[in-house]
Amino acid sequence: MNRQGILIVVSGFSGSGKGTIMKELLRRYDNYALSVSATTRQPREGEVEGREYFFKTREEFEKMIAKEELIEYARYVNHYYGTPRAYVEEQLAVGKDVILEIELQGALKIRDRFPDALLLFVTPPSAKELKRRLVSRGTETAEVIEQRMRRAVEESEGMESYDYYVVNDVLDTCVEDVHRIICAEHGRSMRNREFAEQIKRELKGE
Image (tube, rainbow, N blue to C red):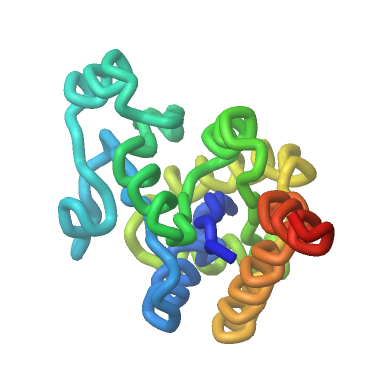
């Protein structure tokens, strides 16, 4: 049975740890590919062009939109974020599970265009813990942290659109939970219709 790659959308509140989870999945397993998003925000300390993001000017990003080089894009806290099309399609074609780390607006656009995509929502165990993590990062002002907490209230209204909730309390446990969910998805009947038809034909002696 040929393994087809699954398009996996991972969203979550800013500070939920979704980026750390994705990096751990890639470190532990070789069947994942992380799609690198394009953004118009400035790099944070330690971020590298082409690794965390493709950093674009607003003009460059809007040209990508015009040329339909993105499979989705959205604005978040005054910046554009989007998913370049070519890399995603290439990795799915060779059987890799492609992870897109994007926010709610983008996730819903992906679900419209790719109905078989798997949508995961990462959340800390409580709102109090979410704020503690945002503060402890030390990368943003108090004003931006409050912006992100207000945004989390809005994002929580869309949680029901996702297939699974992933509670990031203990990182190691959370990473393994995500891996098990994705492995189970590969066995779903809707993803293996061609295989089922082949078995039916073989049983009939065709």
